[in-house]
Image (cartoon, rainbow, N blue to C red; front, side, top):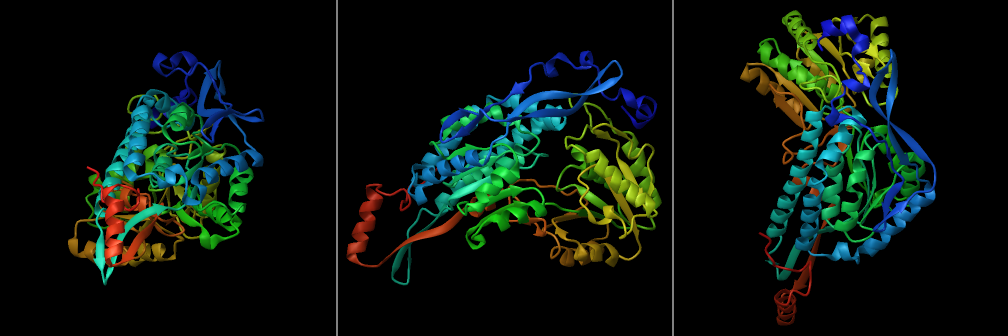
Length: 544
């Protein structure tokens, strides 16, 4: 469905029930009452919350949001029980999982991954229906998650091999390895409720921690098919699920002071609230993926066709609902008109529709009230002199918004500062390269930037100041997270810690060593421990 189609038949964007292919029909609501705690799937007898899809059905001209089912709304007591289970399983570092050898933990994770792949179809279907992600992208998210787990396993093997030798330094024998932190509270985001969540969850688990996992507010039911697999794959209490209001559950957990690490992907505002609730913040490790306002800087000599293609993808993949999305575009005044003409023309050609449609690019937004918020940003900008540059930009139908390209944007407008996390694209002309650089210096965020141009001297001149403002500079390419082996972090309000494969293993662990003075007695003791494999930590076993 092109913009032209939208202009003529916008009301037909949402389908009739019979228009949905049989393969993607959602016939039976998922009434989830179960949650995993202390190695058991427990039935919740308390209140539940309805789960709705961002997809509406057209019933005789009336749009009706599809109800997907319900989820449990746990209370403080349930959260406290999950904490007790996690603390008991960790047992102050003496628990089965915490003291288990790396090889055995890897075996558990391999088994989990094998069984998880069996649930691919169910999880992909729920991803699509719960958050409006296209069928193709939902498949990619599942497959990328499996790849991430496998990469994590291989990275841990490498880390363990590098640590398998005994060092002799200044009269001391020592072996340095990484040990768990304790109990981790893991909270994922709704835009990548599987992949981004597991980028915290998996390394936290495999490093020997016990975990309390709270799914995001959207994308909850997709985890249900995996509950039994989690239960069967890990010792009891190592992984526990909680659901419900974060202030009620997560707040209770943090206030207890018994959370050792907060793994959270969301906003800096919520992260700050959670961290402040911990009575001993000096004892709290953070692994935080937060918001960003990633700029694109388009220089006068940029190759426009390639640039437009990258900026389209960078700003509108999954409707711009990515922390790595390009959220503000700086374009040199000498080419701004040419860029905008091409950019708006390409946006008009994007296919809008439902998640199951082939080659669909623009889909409904899952977050309740999101279109209203985005309209507020647009209206604020228009009132202060901005213009919508593209036909039908900002057109809304229930949970769907057609992308809006805003020109004439300045610092007086909310869109200049706020992370919009949706299909609104502010464009700013610049004359002097110091203008976009100054924007980044003053910004509260510092994740990534994309620079488009052809002059190596000019780009080289920009790299040195930019790498001290953000953590990734992309040359003639969109901002992105992958490959997962690359660092993924941020400065200022954008991150704490990292989600990359090898770095994540380090974030969720601490360097620990066993040392002994060089003596005949100690040589004999260490040799016996190694030869007879008496210790999981002090070991020279080599994992292939």
